[in-house]
Amino acid sequence: MNPDRIIAIVNQKGGVGKTTTSINLAAALANKGLRVLLIDMDPQGNASTGLGIPRRQRENTIYNVLTEDLPVDDAIAPTEVENLSILPSHVDLSAAEMEIGLTEGRTRILRDAIGEATSQFDYVMIDCPPSLNLLTINALSAARSVIVPLQCEFFALEGLSQLLQTVEMAKTSINPALAIDGVMLTMFDARNRLSAQVAEDVRKHLGRAVFETIIPRNVRIAEAPSFGQPVIKYAPNSKGSKAYLALADELIKKHRNRN
Image (tube, rainbow, N blue to C red):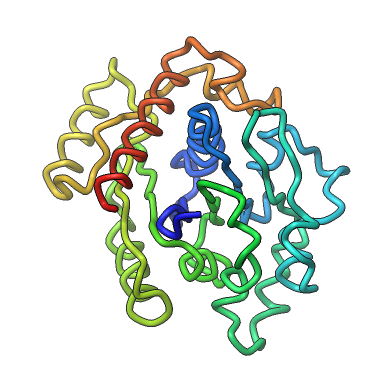
């Protein structure tokens, strides 16, 4: 695979659409005929649930890969979405940070683990936990680029500077190849003047670093995870589905131009 196509979806704040974006962007890329792997690095395991992998079926997970040297291929599971596979999470992942904290090369465990195993995929997406911890640092070490979901709400820019500093730190100390694909605006409510104002402010501060595609606040996006499906499968004609397909097109074009 192209090493530029390992992407960490990261924001230390919860409730910004991080996991929703991970699920639906991965599914949208798969819908384009690309082979996609989603790595669920969040101990809550919502990305795994949202793609129809119930907790009782997660015998081998990213936890086993990080702490027991389980080969990645032994933990990857198919999903109901054609071309989309998942490396699921488990609640035990919350203890992994302590277990690997004293390990030599602790920031590179994920990068070393996925290695050649990802060569069968066109894109690898990593859904990071909502914190800047060792699991997130491992994701930044393994990734070649970062996407930052940002909700269109009052405190949208709060904490963003800290996150960007962490990305720069990771680039300087452990992953010189790391780039930022962009900041993407989520939960946009066209009926709310505040959403429009936040979007304007973010573009004013960050300029071309912001994706053109905006993800709307959409009931179909919210409903889809409870059915274990991405929105493009649950409600393919919804505004949410069309937005994520447009985001996938924008990302593909961005990477093509970079190369």
